[in-house]
Image 1 (spheres, rainbow, N blue to C red):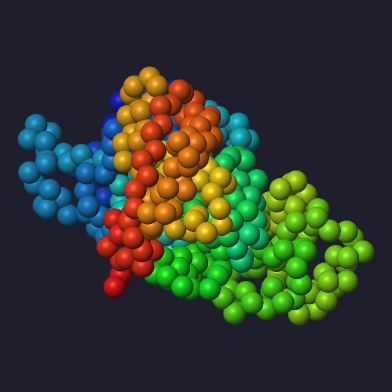
Image 2 (tube, rainbow, N blue to C red):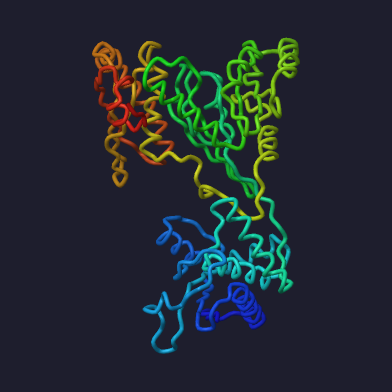
Amino acid sequence: MVNILTKIDNDIMKNLRKVYNAVADFARLPKDVIVNLSFVDEETIRRLNKETRNIDKVTDVLTYPYVDLKPNEPLDTAKYEQEIDPDDQKLTIGDIYICLNRAREQSVEYGHSLNREICFLFCHGMLHILGYDHEKKSDETLMTKVQREILDSLNITREERSFKCGFVTIVGETNAGKSTLINRLVGEKVAIVSPKSQTTRENIKGIYNDENTQIVFVDTPGYHKRRTKIDDAMSQQIADATEDTEILLVLIDAKKPLVEQYDKLKSKLSDDAKKILLINKIDETTYDKAYPKLLELSKVAKVDEILPISALKGTNCDVLLDMIKKYLPTYDHEMRYYPTDFYTDKNLREMCAEIVREKALYHLDDEIPHGIHVVVSSFVEDSDPIEIDAELYCEREPHKAIILGKGGSMIKAISTSARIDIERLLGNRVNLQIFVKVKPNWRNDVKALNEFGIDISE
């Protein structure tokens, strides 16, 4: 039976009991089991999500199963003898919480009654108790099918929602503009930008959200010659990202020979992913110069789309977003890998370290930047100003002297410009201290790389 713990309209209550009976018949549930159903406000369901799932989010329904079942597996109450209530000899198999405000909003969105929306959410929660889930595509397909069959038998339907979600990996040679593009598409500063090559050392995720879409962009290190162990790690990260993605954005430079750039990259591209070839920096050339090269490229490039863009100026970036959405997987429910207020998977320490490295790349000469790495060793957030200690590692003592500068002038310039950006990121005053240290040949030192959090094996 369903035990409705919150006062609700009588018609809704009757339909909820019909839904419970339909699910119970489908799953052959014993008569002596109970499901508790509560209607809560947004604050309560957010708190429950935060306390039990570590997710600070308002969801429409939240389910807590008390039995361990798999789809189509019958419930054996004898296995839960210790949990049976001695007074009424009934077994509670789960609690379901429905956020009434979200249900109202969604009933308007789908153009049907609150009664139907609540019945849909209750059926969804019941199936979770019975072991159904939607973490994997195959599981989601099964759960959707069963849910539809049960509700259709009761003449309770819900208009399907078209939701787009998936991973999009950006690849290209160094300095092609990948970091600039991901920052442009996400609308936030996710990746550091520098005219120096090999700025990006590891895959960085930037997350685009709108009402009907979540796109997880992966900014990869640029393709370049492998000279050190850190180069090997970067190459492996590119390979991993290009294999596990729905769409590949292949970035080449409009000012360089287009076919030659494409030929260098094509063997590294996954056959399974959709491929959009982007001709970046189109604002730095002219139509007369670009058109013949684009025509030549279109004859040889085996991709799904070709699009000239300017990541810096934003030219055709809105067209690109629409193009990406066209190729993303479609879901009939809201499917997000990250909460809507996330725009990157990096934590604040990592973002602050990257800002310091970006400013070092900007201020230092070409021979030093590839040999520097930044680690935030202390981050005291509950102070005002926020206290941040960063360690800037280089490979040689002469480099340390250059980084410090005469009378500390260079490190002061790096620190000042980094502090301004970090304060903008954190929305608070910051006291930033940068300590320059020497770690010889760290780019070829497996132990040092692992200490820095750069995953590489012997």
